[in-house]
Image (tube, helix red, strand yellow):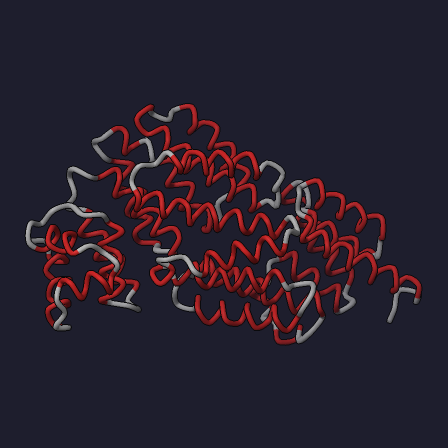
Length: 389
């Protein structure tokens, strides 16, 4: 028996729990426990993960080590469990598992497993400085080599990465088309574990797209569904992100509510997922900046250069702001809509701010178009006062 099989069994015994009792607690079947511990069978990695999470609630290192080592013994059900484990790891920000699966797939003997390697690599790169525009181009090449046997799952992964990468650059124009295709393909998945994981993933992505389209009530309905998802206890990072996005939905309408939900998310994400913790910090800093509240409490080293430029705008150090934004423009060939808006604020140019709003709308990003409206009105008032308040 594998070391981690024994370790899980020992923990159950030490807690004086029967299989019946533990099966209910971990939301797995009793037969799954028997198969794993008595017959050493290859059970669903979702079940293995649930057991590890229940037995070692706050030990993310153990969750990763346990899942990697048990999965490493699998020979028959590799593909299906690789997909399960990848989605679990991606949603929970388990970096070690993701890196392991990238490496495993790149050198695996099964050519169908190997085909997932470039796709997994792009997912892995995304929160680690990957270029979303390059990822979209890479997806076109990956789609050309999808093996027939894996077409359904690989199309789901490809479309999900397309949605994530498009969202990263603020382009929500094609979201309906790709989301609908993902949902259709998920409906064809026969394995219930995997179908459940995929459905949660696409609902999470789609709910945020609704927010960016300014369909705030629909977003909150979907967000509430995510918060009451039957297995949400196994996805604390996603639970925190639900709070973070709920806070984001109040960005322009209610500072206090936005602050409270964002703070809650920060507390939940600390020491769990560095990438998403940084997103929460960015959200908190942005909230303070757009309302010009407590901006002196912001750690400037944590600010993206664009938001540092906004900070200097608020401090009326306009030349510093313009210099930062022009460097960004030279580096990236162009500015994003919000960066273009910051430039308009720094130059007190209403035409630039108005143009930035058009860019937001062209991308289907009506939520952050609100920022351009806010900036335009504030700048207009400043100009009436001769550029000073």
